[in-house]
Length: 275
Image 1 (tube, rainbow, N blue to C red):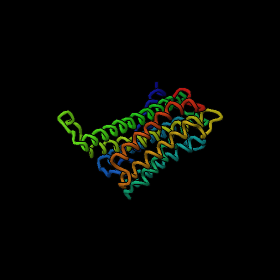
Image 2 (image 1 turned 120 degrees about the vertical axis):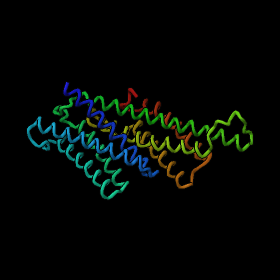
Image 3 (image 1 turned 30 degrees about the vertical axis):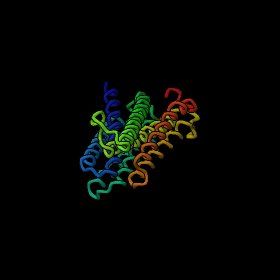
């Protein structure tokens, strides 16, 4: 019963940490105090939970848990989270805090998949459940990219209606072009870090639990290319170099690449046999 509770608590901690990274990523571009504050409290909650896990491990082993590889990684991850909280409170720098938390998240999850995982009090069940979180986050990112795809089509339709001056009461409930464009940006801004987190979890699980896994995999390469393309489009739009209908068409073509990567990439992948 105790192990089950700890397993569920660790799952919640990983999810909260992932959400905080997404929020920090959004805050970097939109500078929203409420988003940054919420992200900070999520990271603080993660720090508190990890501290509790650390203390429980001390009580269980009756020593300072830093002698093995996984224990060292866990302690290092705890230090990174502590540093990010200190930087947030004292220095108030955005980008370094974001990258430190990304590294912290990587080491928190590496701790789960490390070779001596069998000694970990959470057991092997959490490893497989982290795989479920990886798949869930991937699907969630695809859903956000689907929203961007739908909004882009809506943008093109409304643009054509306005250009040809065929606007009528039938289209009166449509949002403005500016609002639709904003929805596209918000969708991909959320989707990019979610897919990135999914890739981190998936890669860590594969390298730590499967034999002969190579990063030269169709699904992995395709997913990284998708992240780069979406991020590049977003930056170009923020700089005013890609906007309007060109931006919408770019979203549509990129989403088609997402679909190809989802189906064809899975067929060509060496280990994505289920997804």
